[in-house]
Length: 427
Image (cartoon, rainbow, N blue to C red; front, side, top):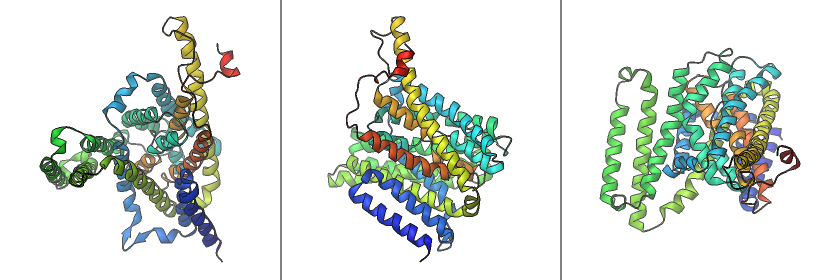
């Protein structure tokens, strides 16, 4: 029997078993099923019924980003006022250390051209929804994780093009403005649409409880979205790339308004449906993207799989380690210095164990969907998208392992993280 069928079969059985016995590992198991199937049978994931599957990658990424947006609200953006330390630390490590780490790995492994650009690109991207999931599983600070993801996403239109221009410009042509528009198209606009959808779906305001008003809003959004979609491309210039995204966002908001009408009519809980359904759809979308990309880049993957996997493990390990231990060290220093200058009543570390775990996931797990979308939609290269594919697969595996390890500590202390011997030396 073909080794491919045996491998995929074993992984499929394992994935089915995780649904029953190890649900926290289910996502990782299904990612492995999809990637292995595409690796051994790439021809099966090229075209279905005349539709090139690669054409679905960017819309799927936008749908995932929309789903991430529906988990956010205004309070998530305002929370930075109360918790600035971990947010600023995480964003600093994310956009300073991770792109540079990617560049150093490119030099160390002798990567060139599009593969080199792809390694740097995944390091230059914001955090993604997977970090929020892992923080939840690993008893991290989920609210902080969501806030960090929100703010790293907000600054992505500036920081990602900047990092790519400085570090990857020697390997591939980088149009910083086109990449800025690409980030807005693939990440910012869908996330913003999701935030608006969240406001409509959960709002208790009178107008959001009237079915007639909601249907009117949905109809208006569909009409505006259609009008935007019909605008000739030559009239939009550089902003033409945003047209389909804006239309899609308006349609999705309209769909959520209609969903709320249905739940109002049935008198059921739309919040429970959203909390259960959207994460599953997002995870399914990620699995589909990784599967299709593996098939699209099969030949290059066969040649470079070992190097890319090693780079992915090192990159991810550095991110998780720096995130966790950087948070602990900064927490200790902030507590000691703050106490001595009279800012705090005691010298305890200012970041809890849960905060440190959250920063680790946020720094170590980049938004692979964003990197993939930019590679295909802006840099027009499936090869550039290959490193994010490999890195993304490994990040989900390592993140699941670490989250389940931390899950054993069912109630990490809410008090500041315990001072280790290393931290004591900093006092």
